[in-house]
Length: 255
Image 1 (tube, helix red, strand yellow):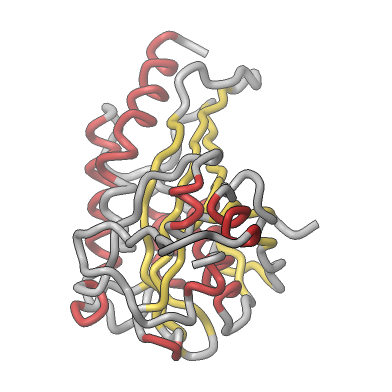
Image 2: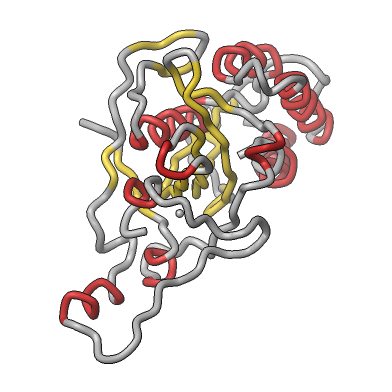
């Protein structure tokens, strides 16, 4: 792979956190149990960390020392199908919402505007008017930023892979759980044509997605009535009890 292609790949990765992760719209004992609560933190403020008053019990002490890395991982649902470049067929429950978000983010073709449009049109709610066009525009801006034509596919000889490390999910509609905000912590790597690994991958990036149950599937939305209810988490660290208390949970794909 030429030095020019190598530099382009690194520039692409450097720009992702600004143009892509920051653009898409979009945490309890676990992410699942948090979805049942309707006491969300106010937008723009971190989720409160539970505190205890008086002597703690052994169980409370163990819980306070828990971290995402020590806790049981959330096993994602297996998709039942593939259509328009995305996995689908996830359940109506909270794990289904999280599974939809994780699979979408790992499969999203963020540097190919045509494929991105196909994927977005398949998963974005019809109530999110103009959202698909906005995201396709962001893909094209990213392409121009790294010296590519505004429209086209991924540069020849370069492939990307995204791995979600952890999620933080909350219901934006109380106990109904019809609209869910899923924060995602992820890594993104570039690989050259000869299989050489990326020396400068994106690590520990965060983004969030808002999903609502509509027409038998989870759909991405940015409707104002839900957007204004978004919460913002404490930083994710796998060995942090604060991250665990704030709702971050590691995920694992089903075998």
